[in-house]
Length: 101
Image (cartoon, rainbow, N blue to C red; front, side, top):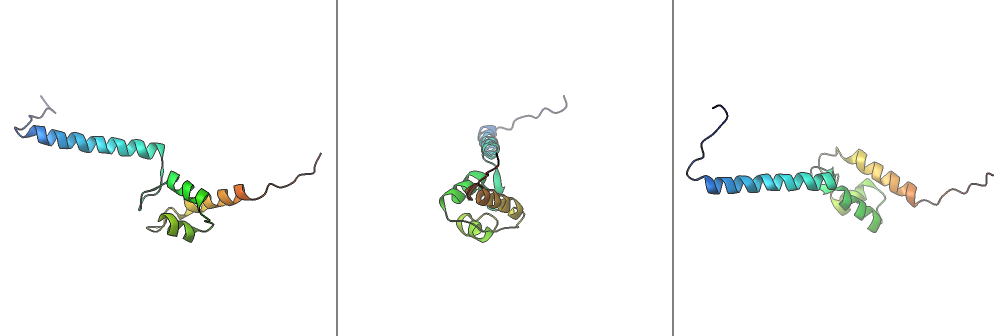
């Protein structure tokens, strides 16, 4: 039969390690799905970035790098981080007053 493998005598420890590795990968995928990674180089999650933005006086990319580490690697996430900063500055600015009726 094609595709079937025989299990060696030392299989229990191998299978346990393999099972553990698969479980870790599945847990990592679930964590990533529920909390997306913003900075892959340093594994900074969206939740960590948002928490830092909400609790620290951060207004620049350099401050994000200093406080979270996000963006300090390959710089591919800088555009995304700048978007978080832009949204934060927009949402924290006073609402415009409209006198239109």
